[in-house]
Amino acid sequence: MFDLPNGLPNKNDSVDWASKHYLVVDDFAGVRQLLRESLRNLGARNIDQAASGGEAMGLIASKRYDVILCDYNLGEGKNGQQVLEEARVRNLLMPSSVWLMVSAEKSVESVMGAAEHQPDAYLIKPITEGVLLTRLNRVWHKKQVFREIDQAFGEKDYLRAARLCDEQMEKNRVHEIELLRMKAKLLEKSGELHKARETYEAVLAQREYQWARTGVAKIRMANGEFEAARQVFQSVIAENRYYIDAYDQLALAYQGMGMHDEACSILERATRLSPNSVPRQRHFGDVCLKLGNIGMAERAYRKCIAIGEYSVRKTGDAYLGLARVCGMKNETKEALQLLATAQKEFTDAQMPLRAKITEGLVYHESGDYRRARKAGDELEEMLASNPERPETRICIELATLLFAVGVKESPVDLLCYLIKNNHDNTLLLEEIQGIFDKARMGDEGKELIQANRREATDLMNQGVLLWKTGKIREAISWMRDARAALPNNMRILFNAAQILVSAMQQHGYDPELSDEALQVLMHVDQVAPGQPRFAQLMEQLAALAPFNQPAVAEAEAAA
Image (cartoon, rainbow, N blue to C red):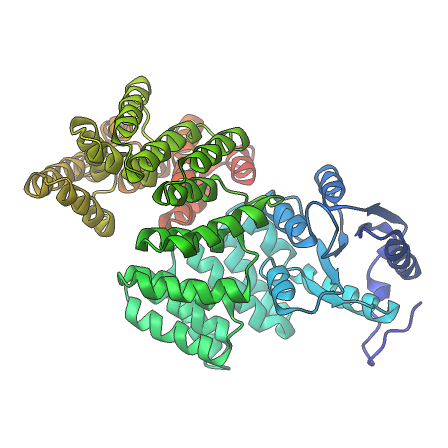
């Protein structure tokens, strides 16, 4: 057996390395051979190799690996960071899988880019056999502590995962701080913000960890305490200018306070430190565009497109945003080319509508009002042909354009739809009022907001009243109609799911009601992931299913 350096205990005897499956990814055959031999000295037998990111993704998608050693630079195509990112997004890694990122890169940009996607270890070349085996052995044993927790997390059973953290802390005191960190995140996702804050504060009572301070600040921001959160994020950055999450959160705090210039400034700093994040570059571009800073918006969107070429997070938003920028610069030809590319590369159902909206905005902002109006007429036809309404941001853009080209009835209907489906979203309602004001409909807009909020509230309250007065079947029927009328109203959806769960708690498990409740909750998680009540209702629903009815658990895992 290979002797481990640094006086570390030899734990190899407790791991059956020969039975594990390994993948070595490097574009140089010689490096692959060296890593393969090192693994063989550990006892490994089942070792696959890949020479590119694309080849690696094909193998990872077709086979489950226990250990992956992946180089950062893989030549043409996906790099190691993008392979790891895609494997995580597509849930192709087992909870206990170990990912070791290997690279000769020592630059802050490369290390931070890879670290944002959280490999289990980052190894700098040249790597000795002793270093490789020591890190692999250490990481493997650590991963086993989190195995069941990760499994529950993957099934979206966040509260069970949080309880498993407590169980593991009793057995593994050496990992207590890491388990507390995981528990706090799980409680956040479960909507138990008070308990999550208590967990973070328990950590801070032992030591001033920056991640724990950031966690408390995120919770305060979620509760609307933007100024208090801002102060914490700024102090974390002052202490550690490489703590990139604090930059992203600080930008959100500034936006929540309406300080968009400051949000733009902090995102600019973040993209200089870690420029290879597609979501961050897109966010930066969006903020710059909203401020009218065309030069910075163009650079952010072009960077987003470039780094997203081989990324699973490649987004049509960057193409549409850059097209808007080109329209503002009177570069209509490039804008239309970008829109054509977006429709070719992104085939989601809403892309044709989004591209047509952007086309209308490009024409309007470049002064071609005749073509802008023509685009508006075509958009009205698209709305009339499809009763389903797009997501909130698209509705806002569409209403803004239609008002700008002289249409009134359709944008008013769109905004009323948004008001009813978001009747308790104060920030969105203020934005909608601003659109009415810009369209010189300020007073009428106020009346429409009040009337539609009242309609949505009455619709929800009637169903809840039927439930609370014991008329459970009538309540279920009422909430079905309410969901049909307002399919994206979070309050109505959650109350509908709660009433279905309550019916089964009172009268016993019903597979049809269970399936209906699950469909409602999956729709919630698709429209607005991370809602506080989601995890609580999912756990209640799972608890109702008899042992011979695993449909809920299977659906959770599939979701």
